[in-house]
Length: 612
Image 1 (cartoon, rainbow, N blue to C red):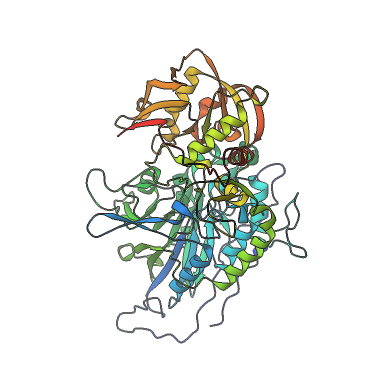
Image 2: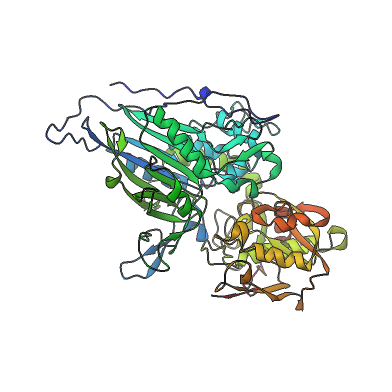
């Protein structure tokens, strides 16, 4: 059988979602990968082809990953590590993992010998990216994913960082509307794979912004993919870029399109869902099916998985940057695979879906899934290496400029229990200093959202700059959003409510602990629940108790002052003054407080007292 060509990409277009959004395009159904050669043997006795023939039962390999965030080069520091659980119950660090060159090699090796193999992602492929990708509006990452042969991805919240118009360009191609083409004679071609966003709709028409589903087919084997992002996306992205869009309930949307796929004769279904869970252990190989108190997995994905229709055979998830390969019962009580591959290309998941040609469905009892480390002890993929070098050469004049010096690694631990982080403290201090002068806002303290700190500062040189030198590219990787800073008026009561919203409301299941400047302290009691976790009479500024009736000037980025990350009370601010960008303040602080002779020390983590 000859290889089946990919369907022309012009069929994949963002649907009209309001004034000024991208052009209408038709939904597409099947988009087959290339078929294998004919002549494979059929096992007449069992009818089982083991993924290699035309037997009744076919093993389909599903390779998946999530939350790449434009990390083409190997991530450094804690971003390039994983935790492994050993047989004796202790843990060890696995260093030097990740990097698109190595991810490509691992995926290509994993596909060898598998006639039926499909590669899928669960969102946040782009956005919050290091400078190598972010400087060029993530065109390098899309090029790399095309070379990786990604078949399909859901959108994540970060795909909306630059708004729906830019997402249309990422899907369909074309040069950037203001910066143009980055390479002479070359026009960005867009993603070869479809981005799915079934629950992102036009508020007025109800039509999906993007294709809601995709049908992968080879040799008559069909698997449907439904892609959704988290319902709360509007709370964690800039409101301006998503005007006119509605983010619907994940369960309702997946169940709706599962029925659509069933009517089309597709009974094998995988949900790509940019929402996730929190396993009891941070080890990538932890068995989250372990029973008992304090074990297993928690977070939004548990309730979602328990309510998604049994028609869906597996859920590939993301957003929480955690690693797990679990089973969570579906509404009928039957175990169903739910996976996530951490973040930054450090892991990929290999799931075997056993397809029954007679029923056209997945044999759920035969589903097997495991996460695999993207080690760097394999040969890097030459085509991805060349891509990285090409873009690095373009970025070099900006990326390599020194902006400061550090005495040691200033970490940004990914552990969900690391509430106060050295790098978060450094950034909050930089923001306070930048906004404290009377003519700059008169700020008395600063608050920084933890999700805005994207990577650690690593002492070891990443290039020729020398150990301890912080380059502009490294600083950009830490703070890639270029949010504008603001100084606003908040009452003491509103400040306390802000702290309480870290651990209640939208942040109840997964606390978002703000990083605070050095003059602001309080106690966080994790033995309690919800807003009670904030010990109100412990909240102090410069050693003095916060007065609920008094007005304070607070520095924060525009994302927070707009109520992002579930901090609705921050929208009640008054007297906003806009300053420079967070990145400019960060680099200015590094330059003012460090030199080769006197590098910046690691900030202490003594601002939030945690009771566990």
